[in-house]
Image (tube, rainbow over all chains, first blue to last red; front, side, top):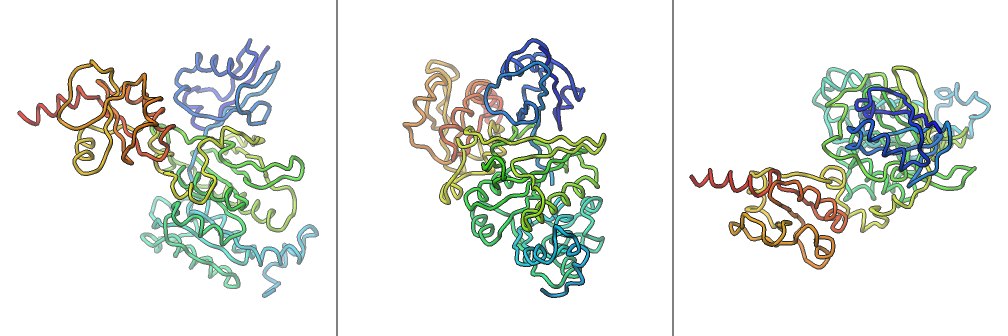
Length: 77
Length: 371
């Protein structure tokens, strides 16, 4: 089970990589936990999560090779 | 229709034609913010012949604006943006109506302002305005064309408009139910933005507005596009309705009037320094809460306060009457900072602070003052 993660906006400052993979997770809650273990600085940020381009709310089941995008809010105009 | 020749090249389009041009001429669009996003959007909306355009901005033109807000010139520096922009836009197309609102959009004026328009284009530069614009558009059922930029990245999308396929409407709170923590909120002023980027996102917003008004193509309803200018990557997100977003969501006129947007966007977890605290408690009505357990030292009798231990705060706080401002303290400032989240949830309309450094720091400083 492999999940591909893409980060957007200021989240990149915390991960220093635009994309990475996380293995062996079944849902977005487990995924978030593993992401935070790998990039503890991310835990201070709020961001929305999209699974295969759909914004998800609450814990969501993941499948092998899903693409999860982490999108922070920014307000510049 | 006035001068058709002006719009000849778009009327020529099969999908557009005279019918679409008529729709534009009778449309009313409110542009919030005449900055990086608002200016390019305004220029194209005016040029395209949107018949009635409102511009809301309270800021003045600054030299640091000119690399991206290219409607302005050197001679506009120090001038109000809403007025300077209107002057340039009138020169571009005198056949349409342009109204300048030289003011800050607040929950006191948003409902009245937005109700006069068919569609809102948000080019604001702060979260408080973004949530206010969103909530007002939801209440008044107005389509909202959203755009935001930072550094080399931009987002554009359309909220509060049903798409033909799914038949649901989403809004900004379905995408971002809560604003980021204030300490992590960074703006273009602090972190920068490449000048061309708001030009790209702002003109995309203008195009979405034109598509919505004229009914051509597929507007970005329930969708956000993220654009990265450095690597030319576009990524789209489908926004789904969420019941999370309804929790803190003011849904009536009165609730919007009473909703503290500045607090919601800036002070979730706000800290107050010892000096600020002393000024606040001597000059204003404020409820001060000691959230330490009942037997904890040092004992405080220098100012009046109530004691609600952190463990009981959730059950006790709803039973007590409060001033509009609350300061919570503990020994170091750590527990009180945590308590803010609970207090903010139960008392969303109060402005609550955590005493930075806690009461130990306050004691130290005030002992020094006396000596």
